[in-house]
Each structure stands twice: as structure tokens, then as C-alpha cells.
Amino acid sequence: MAARKQARQQPEEKKERVEIGMTTPKSRFSEWYSEIILKAELADLRHNTKGFLVHRPWSVLCMKEMYKLYEAELEKKCHLPVWFPAVIPESNFKKEAEHVKGFAPNVFWVTETGDGTKLPEKLALRPTSETAMYNMYSIWIRSWRDLPMKLYQSCQVWRYETKATRPFIRGREFFWIEAHDVFATEKEARAQVKEDMEITEAIMHREFGIPFISFRRPDWDKFPGAVHTYAADTLMPDGKALQQPSTHLLGQNFSKPFGITFKDESGNDKYGWQTCHGPCIWRMMSSIIAIHGDDKGLRFPFRIAPMQVIIIPIKGCEKDAESLRKHLAVEGIRVMVDASDSTPGWKFNQWEMKGVPIRIELGPQEVKTGIYTLKTRLHVTSDDKLLHPKQKYICESIRTLGSMITKELVRRADDHFYKNQIHDAKDIKSLESQLKKGGFVRVPFCTDMAEGGACADKIKEETHADVRGVRADKEEKPTAGAKCVACGKKADVMVYVARQY
Figure 1 (cartoon, rainbow, N blue to C red):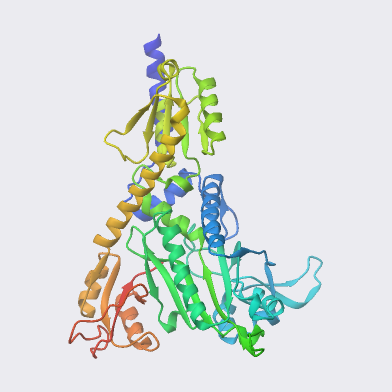
Figure 2: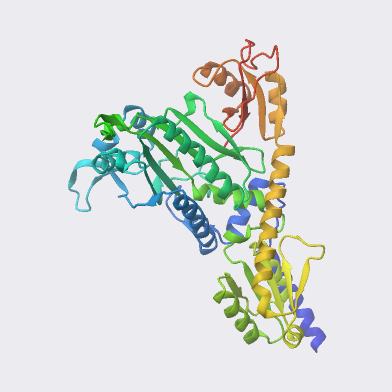
């Protein structure tokens, strides 16, 4: 009878795994990405407002930890937090002409109240906060003693995106951090741009495991109102570029129309020098999903994993599992117990798909001996299972394993990025050939980033790819006699080209 009962249960277990487990290999990235968003319960796409995403707990838990790390780093660099209104008066929005020209087509406008009363002035749902914050900066800043002013806010922004939307990649509402800084000198502002890039390296790369190249964008692709734009571009598994944090040297382009002035030590009135920096937590989430995931599902760096440990009780050990959970939770480890009536095998597959870094299997033998089996989602030891003899020291071992997992994810991502996704081409034909491989293609280009728009347009027309810019972290010169890939004239710079999201 027991054998017949087991036989009856097997088809049900198989059906359960087919419904829940991943069925698409990551090599079919677009389908894989859509499937993991649904099956790992990161978001629900059934909300009836296009471009606005319902975020489920598994993604929110991760993004909350991402926010914490970024905010802590900003505050370590002397930024202070603020909260500004989500709406911006139209008169504020129009003060910087180039800025309004760049953003106006994508703004959501609030024009009336619920009873149909027309507002005396249209209000923009913030697409970014320069025009909201700088009006107040002109009030707060009076003297050189008020500088530097370095403020940030973590918030949502809204843009009427007309291209195809995709969860965490492109939408009409997204979640980010924006830092807005004012300095007494241009030198200080340029130093802040460098610091912003260092923050991106410290957090996005080392903690989140997202490799990138920092580019100075060409003038035809810079932030509206900026002197220069610097952006960190990463690559998705399909070889397309995805812009991550950008930082903008604003110069005095906003301080003049907004009247952000200060009296220097000699009593002279001066305009401030400004920068702004925008790490998009929402979009970084997409890169974490895409870069680290595998055929089984998600894999998270330890410090931002929604849950860092899952405990699987076996054969009536639920109370012991709950006791262990409490011990780990008191020590600051994010941990859950799966005491559901699903089979242990199904649970193992489920939590692997959801990317929990460490699993503890707790059965009668473990309870009796006090030796726990720790299994890592990413193999970082010679054996994928570790036996731990004492509960007293288990938290230390979990954190050590967690650090090893993150470092290995970073190593693998970097290895693929730098060895397989950067190519070179000398002419349009070879550029098109290299673009088929995906990734960045480095090419000689005729002029600097202030001009050259016509050559960039030709590249776009013939290859459906974009000039991302010149490297901001180092200078790269063309070889002697190199010609621009677009026009054939003498090349002065090396630019990177990629197809993009």
C-alpha cells in the first residue's frame, strides 16, 4: 500500500515542478527573463496601467537592501537625505530652456482636481528633480559657508516612455536615488563627478556584481542642460547595452536661471557650480537578475539577497528549524523556514530558482549531532555542501560563505564582460560583423564628442547601433593612420558602439 501511495504522489510532484521550475534556458534570454520575473514572483504584469509595474515582495526586499547600501555610501561621502514633493510647478520646470526641451515630451501633467476644478498652474509629476530642488537651493545658499551642499533623495520618477516597456528595464515609473550638489568652484564640481564614479564602483560593481564601463557621452546624447554627462554602461546577456548610474557636470547652467548664488570670502556674489547623480535602483535590479541568473533561476549577491538563508526541516524537525531561524534572525541574517507540505526535493528546486544563497537542511541526524548541512546556491568550495558542527559559530560561517558567493559572482561577471564582450572594428563592415556578437565595439572616430553627430547618425542608420561615448576612466588614442569608421577622415578618438535597450 505504501508503494502504491508513493507511486500516486510522484506524478503530482512532477506536475508541481513543471509549473513552478524554470523551463527556458538562459541562452534564450528574452523568454528566460520574462519567465523568471513571473515564476520567482518578482513582479506582476497584470496591472491595467501600461508601463507601471506591480512589485512583489521578492524584488522589494532586494531593492530595499540595495537602497541601504547606496544611501550609506552617499552619507559616508557627506551627502544628506531630503524629501521633495513629487510635483513641480510648470514655471519652475521651464526655467532652464534646454532641460525643458529635453524632458517636456515625456512629462505627466496634473491639470485639475477630482471635482474638475482647473489648477491655476499645471504641475509636472517629477521626471527628475533639478527644477524642484534648485528653487530651494537659491533660498538656502547665501554664503561660501553654506557650501558644499550635497543632498540626495530616494524616490520615484515618472516619464511617459513611448518605447516598449519591460520590467525593471524600461517603464513609466521607476525607483532611484538622485544626488544634487553645489560647490564654490568648478574644480570641486569635477572632483564630485569622479567621486560619483567611485561610488558606482564601490556599490554597483563590488556589492551588486554589475560590471560596467564609464563613458563620457557625446554632446548630442548628454543630459538636457548638462555641460558633460558621464554614464556607467553595462551589458545584458543578449549583448545589448543598458545605461546604469549617470552623473552630470551641470556647470552653472542651472545656478544662473535659478539664482543659486553665494558671497565668497571677499564678499563678491558668485554662481554655484553644480553636479547631479542618478543611481537607478530599479534598472540595476534588471542587471542583477540578468547577469547573475542561470538556467535554474536567480542568483543573488549575499548582502542584497531577499532572503540570505532558507531552512528546510525534514521529518518533523519544524520546531528545531524555527529555533535555528530565531537564532540567525537575532544575529541580523535574513532567514526563512519552509515548513510547507511540499517534498524536500521540490523545496530545494524552488529556493534555488528564487536565488537564496545558502540552504540549511535540518533533519533528525542534524538535530541529534548538532552538525548542520549548509548548501550554497553558487558553488564556492570544493564541496557544495559544508558541515557545520556548532550553532554558536554558524552565523560567522554563513557570512564568510556569503562573502565568497558575492566575490565569485563578481569574478564570473567580470570575466565574461571583459573577455567576451569588448571587440574592435576598423570600418563599417567589420563594425556590423562585430555587433552581431553583442557587446561593445571600439572604433576609431573622426572628432571629439562636441561634434560628429552626422557620423554617429550614419553608424546608427547602417548598423542600428549607438555611439556610447569615449571612456571616462582612461584615454584611448587611435593607432597612427586610423580612419573614422563612418566618414573615412583622420580619427582623433576611440569611441564605443553598441546596440541598446
